[in-house]
Every structure is written in C-alpha cells, then in structure tokens.
Length: 118
Image (cartoon, rainbow, N blue to C red; front, top):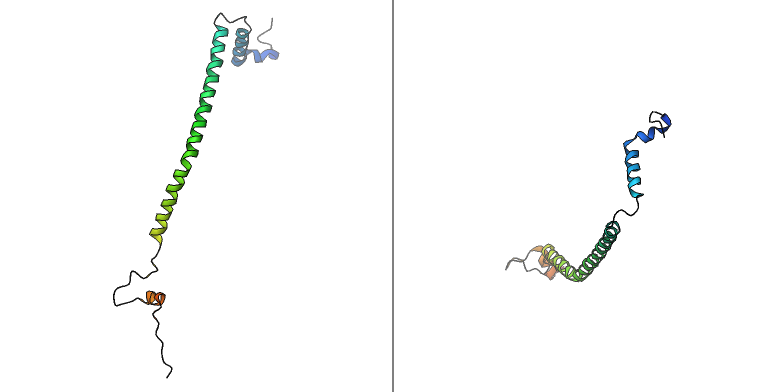
C-alpha cells in the first residue's frame, strides 16, 4: 500500500495523524449500534435543556438586579447625606461660648460697632 520509510509519507508516521485516521474509521462505521441514535438524541435534549435553564436563570438574575436598583440607590443616597453631614461645618455659630464670641461668629452674626469720627 505505502512504504512507511518513504519521505513523501512521513506525515503518516505522526501519532496525531494515526489517531485522526482511527477516529475517521470509527465515524464511518454504519449505525454505531442500537443506542447510538438514542444517545445522540438525549445529548441534544440535555444540551437544549441546559441552554434553556441558563437563559431563564440569567433573566431571573437580571430582573432581580433591576428590582434591587431603587433600594440600593436609596441606601447610597442616605449614606452620601450622612457623609456630607459629617464633613459639614456649622456656620450658625452654635459652637460659640457664652460671653465670648469668636471673631468669625461675631462677623457672621453681624456684631458691628459704629465709631464716631469726632
């Protein structure tokens, strides 16, 4: 048939080539037994079922995420308000000690003196 030592047929000595030839010969056999078609059908049904389950699960998680967005937005808004309140400074002068107004609070509250030019 062919000479294994012929350099033109060197690729046929390759293990991958031989494995491919064995696979090809197995695929060309007629029928594959009485369970071959049944196994193929169940394999496709299982694959289709997994695709459907994955799609439904993905849609469920997407809808759950959309439903939770307003709740998360409300919580983040409250957290930002709390952070702003912690960083804010009191400009109303409530930190002033009795009897001793500070220079800034006196200026903000309008404690001015009118001096005579005489």
